[in-house]
Image (cartoon, rainbow, N blue to C red; front, side):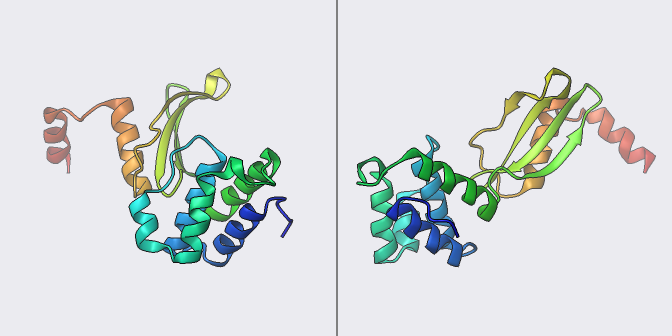
Length: 165
């Protein structure tokens, strides 16, 4: 793998690459993501429970990443690119075309799923984003997106559906 130009980022990425599906690997990936963006990171309780001594020290250093002697934004950008690929951040899970020229997209966020409503006719402008709802299941995110667009089913519609089946 390409050297990311910051010792701290290299150490964290090495651990995440070796343990991408473990709780501690996911937690360190989320912590690094948070250190590279303004997105809130993992909980301190989760860090206390899942990280060993070495990784808890790296976690603490990430909280003060700008004080690292070799700090630079290029290394942060490269780390985010690799995390997107490795952890699936930003990957679209569901895409549902709507009759109104809009599209619902459910995507992998930071250790959770989110949804957004995109106006296809307006160049892909994002009309709405669920932001930090942190769905654990992409299907629940899709359900809420559909409810946002179409509203709750009315009771007589349910009765009609039951009679039709």
